Length: 113
Length: 110
Image (cartoon, rainbow over the protein chains, first blue to last red):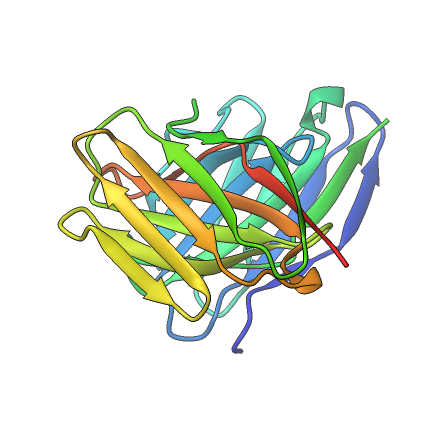
């Protein structure tokens, strides 16, 4: 597609439950990025992919966060055993190059109660 | 951690006026990008300026980059109500990921 699609728009989970977010990048874009935005301020980089390969995962809290981009499937970001501090908007972005402009999806708002 | 800091944090102007916001960063960069975020929405890319460029224009937007001072500015001329949004600078320090500033919230009053 011509836009980055993210589902669901909103997700509510009780503390300790699993959360799974999905992202469909723009067709033809090889790079996918995940960011976390807390309180409308800071965007924190989580992980990036080049096609189905992890490109950079230095931002991922590895104990509970995992992500995949498999061929012919939406990319996913999964949080095991969610914590209150995971409440945020999670944005996915895609691009043709790791150095150029990134196209962002509308985000998934995760609320952990 | 964030690379950029933006100034001011918030800006309120009258329609038709110009809005200027600044971004300072800490390390050497490949490029600097400006994005806009409307309330509750994703980021929209506005302009990218490379480290060897000093100024770039796009419509009513003008971006400058001063690598010696590690700073950039975004000027929006003849502002409109639709320009009400948060504006973020983002730097690529050659590590293939964007580091964002905390943003400037711009309110354009009719």
